[in-house]
Image (cartoon, rainbow, N blue to C red):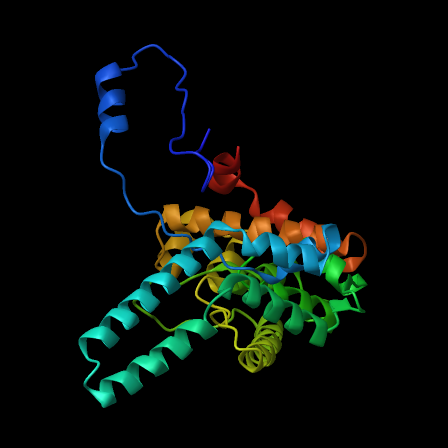
Length: 303
């Protein structure tokens, strides 16, 4: 088990024996120097509504104050304050330097409790959009849909569901639009477009929703997610319409491995949408998208 922060001085691990295990390699791994572990944890909209639903906002705030990410934020703040105070002692005779140090202290103090405070700002966005309401905060019907969507653009996805962006699309067009919520282009950008008129209109509405969410995030001093990316839309549209893998790869300049990986991401997102709405036409069309994508190499990879 891992050592408990502030309690244990060491942790323990048990490695089950298996044929071919090299004890020397294992001991070398255990004796290797440690590497810095930096938490990249940040509260998401999905996480926030799930925490409010299970433990409530106040308890969730308290839990985040004891998180590893918060511990690292506090430790970084302590280091900054020590450096500032050390600089003060060195430059005490320099009034200008002292003024700069004072401003550094004020900025550092505003950053304490950053993880829990970010959670509160996330809740502010959710309350403004109707996913949380009341005092204490409670999860609304829209919030319950959000509890079932796990992705970088989780809030944009549910806002699109509420706005009917996905309604009435063919399976291929729906797959194309869903792909913009999960696909991430490589650094080199190439020109892409949505594959047909209906997906183009839906994609435009989706980007409008992303802009509105992004503006609200700025109001609450939250970093915004990247815009929906249309780079995979034509490839998955062709695949759902029955194109062979060779043609999809040739026309869309994508490797087979990348195609399978992103196709499975679309399947996962379509499954989340189907599970979130549970019944109705969007549920049926999302399930159809999954059925049509899971063929050939995609189906083999999934198995």
